[in-house]
Length: 127
Image 1: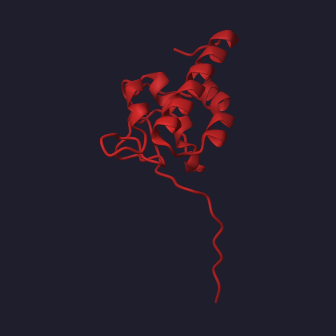
Image 2: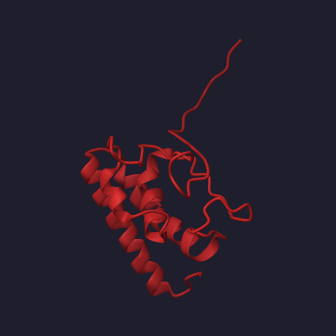
């Protein structure tokens, strides 16, 4: 069900930010600044705009998000946990051996991630 109440979306975005801070703090690494800057956008996409179902994350009729800036994975993970794709406790294991959340989005091991991505870079092809 889509959330249309602005106050409710603001509260969800606040919880997403808490997840970002907790996950990067526990990991002792990550990019909290970039992740925090996209929290509102991901909240609106996942809770108001996108056609998705956390109970059926591989549905053929779902909308898909490609997060090309993979360094903001903590924001995506926190949003997915808030939406119910996986337990929020998993956020505490960001970048840990016993956790499923890597430093960049991984579509093979994380429910709700549609494309594995990494850091953005410019490539030059020369003769």
